Image (cartoon, rainbow over all chains, first blue to last red; front, side):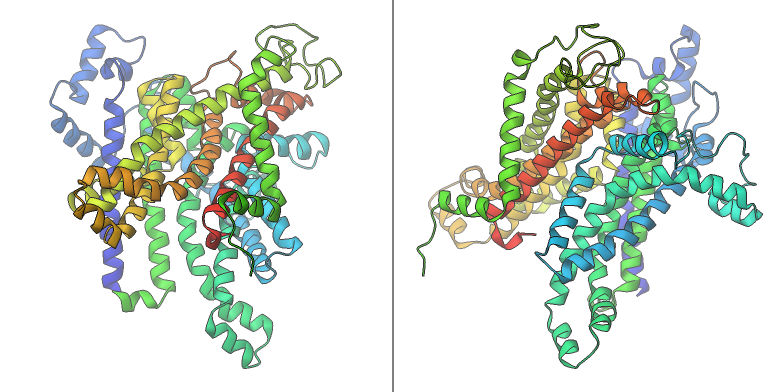
Length: 337
Length: 284
């Protein structure tokens, strides 16, 4: 089995290389003088020249690329013009905020979409099936910023159930001592119930928005996968042997049907990372996405490129994780290798 | 046994079987009409300010209400149809024109072609696609043309994969061999024989991509890239209304957002319908 794991790890390497190459090309694709862009609008001629030397922009492209990779290896993603801080430091500080939202949404989406897909599969063509299809198609057609705004309007303005969409915590609370950066976990570790609730309440709307968006692929995949598994011979045998319908459904069919769903999760992560950028803007969430947008509006390019690179690498690693998870779950993979 | 249906008969059968498909087709026709005739039929100039009291709710005079500058939202939403659909259509067309030949070559010629092209497609897919679009627009400049380019780039892998799969399956088919024996060169085989066969699944992809391209362009505009105010575009219209939604003026964002959703919904359903027409086995 370790050979299979190693193969998967090696297969991820070209993707990592590709991500780095494309991000590098994007940094050099800026029309005009890249040195002027990185030095900033207010820079003098000498400052621009200094930046040019520093980034090695006067050297041939190949040498620039190796310099870039060297910088990456040292963790140097450049400096933000607006804050003067190293980009990597700022990204790492803001990453837990985005991760907390994404992870919670994934859990919620699976908790809703998988049972939905299973139920739709057991009664194909029924009203439930059509309704599920309608809900999931509608969910995926709604732009995330619109869903977010609608939810904020209904649940904050009209009903007053949710707090104002102003970020991770109500200003009267201060964040818990940092262990993981995820407020729910940190607040729980610190034993602060009021803080935990405050953090949880702020999370509800952004998480709901993202969940609605990703319900569709998970539910569809579960449904299609369940339908094909339920028509398999071994399920027929299980039923004929007199096993209870719930046993057949869960222990026999679902466990096999979940495999393609796991592979879909890789694609779903891509959607989530992309939509997290927008959701962060709608709810004022201090994550990496809003960091990149702010930098973009201020024509500050280093953070944007750092963001694209980080998200690319994160996505490759997440897909690798999903691949490895698949290897662990599916015993047939060992035989194929 | 009933007689086999003609193509038109088959289409009619699918449409009647699934009323949702009929709805999708009607909506699609509606959007086309709005895009083509909208600007000449709207009651107010979409850019004219103070045609009504600022931030007034939907009424008889202003069906969708007015925004903070007193502009008629209904006119703005209808006129935006042309821009949004135009951007999405251009991006998808560009992806199609570049992606299909690349995919066909990769699938049919194999070897070095396959390795390079597949590797390129995989590298694009290694990014979360919206993030890549942001990166491309940030690098190349904040214009509508670059939005179209960025959306086209991130949609390329879908067409490459579809074309590659179709070409690969038919590579060793007998009729391809026959075509080659008749003296057809590779180029002719790719264009005349393989391309028409790859068209049906590609058409499904085109429809689904249209919906996705619209969402993409709107998302990029929402965060401030691409189309700039006061140009009416659905994403920008929602962004303009975002600040008012928490104080109760819901109509400024609601109507553009609903129009967005309807457009994407239409193209998604249309894609499903096309899939049902072309390949009944893949019906979901």
